[in-house]
Image 1 (tube, helix red, strand yellow):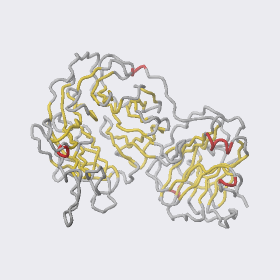
Image 2: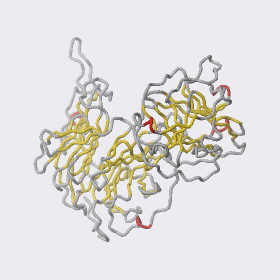
Image 3: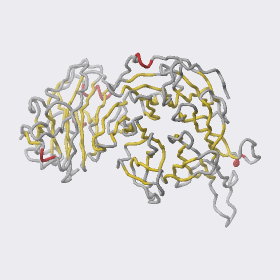
Image 4: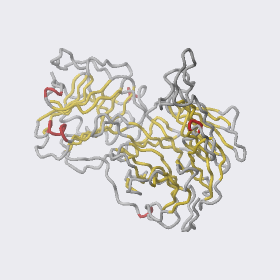
Length: 558
């Protein structure tokens, strides 16, 4: 027996969920095949069982919606009441469903909805043949499955059906269904809020927008960018529209990565991959192991100097043939620098230093770690700021955010999540800000209070085995309610976030579906995004933190 959605007061949710302000709805480019996708007609068009409910954001003054007044609630009191028995003799705990018909000429089908989830169960999403026929072998498609143990904030679930998956639904009368199966169980604190459901006969992936007038180049070349040229990675500067490209540094061995501007905009630090010992090669090639320096150069490319050098260690000589009763092979130790950032004094830098072992035939040894270090030139000896952490970013108050990780071997004393480190006290004070390994690569906003992260979402792309990346914006004073700025289903991955001096824009690296990468801009207020480079050769960009208009840089290449 099917039941209508129940309308409930939002107040009883306060113990299990945090309040979030309503946010703008997604723009509607194609007609929605779902009736009342935002639940604003109090659930008209929808059916549910197992105590699926509606929440009214106005009844208790709590805004448990993404947009508008109403949203659907699953997970709470999911008892299977009125739910049908399935062909496998199980009874779902809850179903939220609506019938629809997919046009026979649909060029693609995009299914999306906004959700916010907490505590543990598993959600299945279908375009199903009927109210109780969820097996894709019986018709329709499974759109995805995700756990409700999610990091905070409203986030988008979106998948685009093309190819064989599109052929299975084109011209069919189906049901959009969100289901909690009997086999998964529901925890006492499980909550799933759903809003703005859309099913459209179009490809509604994130699309490029025109370049904003404010980002037109002015000749100051505020972006420091690493680009691939043949087998090399070199450092360039360019304008925010991708023009006025200028080579300023080729690196020690042509492998320059992850540029970072000093806070005063006068210097650039880079990771300078090379070998140790360097520059004199050793007759034994195993001694010429990959290592890294941190190189600092002036904004015009002059004055390059190394302020730090890692020291990798040779293992057993290759090829290794173990003598009878002899010792096992000793792996070589590879130590590099992965990221570097400045502290606000324009002198010290923080860096992440991963290390791992590798046997002579190329197989990685078990283990490995990454620590965040502080370098104070001219001393080359670092001080440890945080163990089992990577990707540091410093704000104007000297606080450092790091991406912490827990090792399955149990050797790490740090839990997953984003950590804040205060190096002004000894020992440095550590505060865990987020608890999920889905959020990574933090980047402080220029205001020193907010920060952006890259989130690995639950959404499948056109390849269901992939996961879509997103950019979330956290407020240090309200960590429970981050805002999704970008859903990046226009590429494979995103990385290397860097803020404009006024905090109005971000630049990020987009790995394309063909494996190449470009630099894109993101308007934080509107969510509009577009490419700065289009040739697939750009790998990371850093935005000069101070606005210096029309500064023409002479060509100085090292």
